[in-house]
Amino acid sequence: MRILAPQAKAVLTHPAAFALQALRGFRANQGLLLAGAVAYYALLSIVPLLILIVIALSHVIDQAELLQTLGRYLEWVIPGQSKAIIFELSNFLANRDVIGWVVLATMLFFSSLAFTVLENAMSVIFLHRVAIRRRHFIVSALLPYCYILFLGVGLLLMTLVSGSLQAIGSESIDFLGHRWSLGGVSGLLLYLLGVGGEIFVLTSIYMVMPVGRLRLRHALIGGVTAALLWELTRHVLVWYFATLSQVNVVYGSLTTAIVVLLSLEIAATLLLFGAQVISEYERAARGSADAPPQALHIG
Image 1 (cartoon, helix red, strand yellow):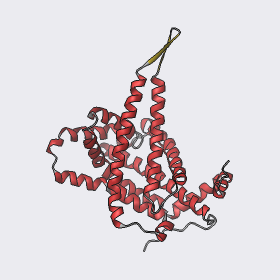
Image 2 (image 1 turned 60 degrees about the vertical axis):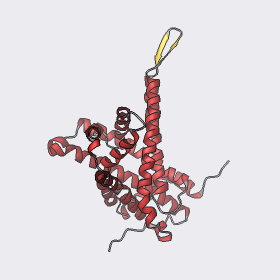
Image 3 (image 1 turned 180 degrees about the horizontal axis):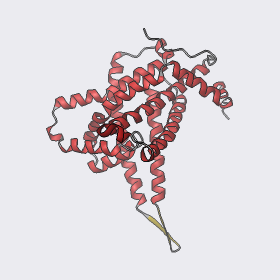
Image 4 (image 1 turned 90 degrees about the horizontal axis):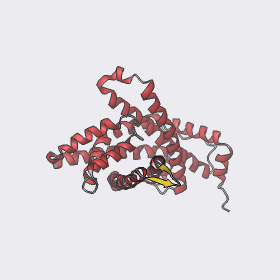
């Protein structure tokens, strides 16, 4: 039987103290300010990124099926606003024959902005890693495009698997004169697939974006933390926008942009907080958990 590491025992023994320490570190690193920057550039990147991925995958998978899967899982990132983005994507794809190389290059540039800013935000949270080892600028320049390719492959796999699960949901089982539909099982499996994909993507971000090599179990700690917090927050957002929100009265035609930006900022905050949890866990492993978090100094 494997014995727990000392820092793991400390976290399990005093979870509230560890959570408070992570919150203090997040505040010291200006986490909300970093999340705002990541959310802004993610808003600029999300549409061109999705256009590039859909254009590439539409040569392999039926475009309607691809957009359906994309719309389903966009609800996990921007609750209640996926239909508006899918509608814009459909309009753009209907006229993609007139797209030139300049437009494609521009979309490729803008689609990488969010990853570049996210990498810089991670370097603030993992400042101790940057001080020891810096990433070569060529690696930093190519990393966003490699990750875009990775997301495209992930969407391809999700589309294939979700299509199979939907096919299962249309079936039923006949036994001793009774018929049971598999629709509920299919829905549960689709939800679990989404949660698993969410944890996998978050873990991969924590593995790739910080400088240096991060242990898989440390990345999983941050990925599970951020995914669980986002799942709770996502359901609250869905309920709020469906019942209490009056944002459409205040912002009118800007409602979609405002709601998407708000959702992305909350998601970016939880993403960076998951990174802060990993950072604090690493500090505990180095025996410096009792030291005050190192604040970000500007100028």
